[in-house]
Length: 172
Image (cartoon, rainbow, N blue to C red):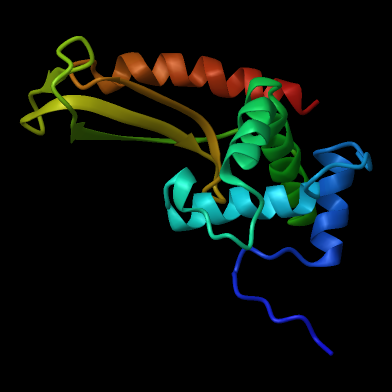
């Protein structure tokens, strides 16, 4: 009998095997909840955008899921895993593991009432913050930074370029 999969974030055995090996370094310790179910719960949260407390009951308790999410972020595992995954996909596509060129984009958006974070983007006539990214030709984000909307794109280009270079250098 086949197991019914209610969620798109359910991982195949092959996907989980890769994640367990590369992200968790084959962690097989006994726990109250399986790490696969915790990882799938985090994917569900990211895809659905639901609140932690509204995580479906099919998944582990939200506090446990949050504990692992926070722990893995603090340890830098999430960033490291994503960088490894991007390098692997680039090599599979016949590209160098680290890109030599990136495209920058910025978006000014209205932001809450905290005055210290807000700036004014005169070009877009928006008071708020600016989201800046650099992507490779595949659309993978190489660097990102949120700043005051009043900071000019050319200044952020230099800061983002420095960040993306350090990410690219990590792949060699």
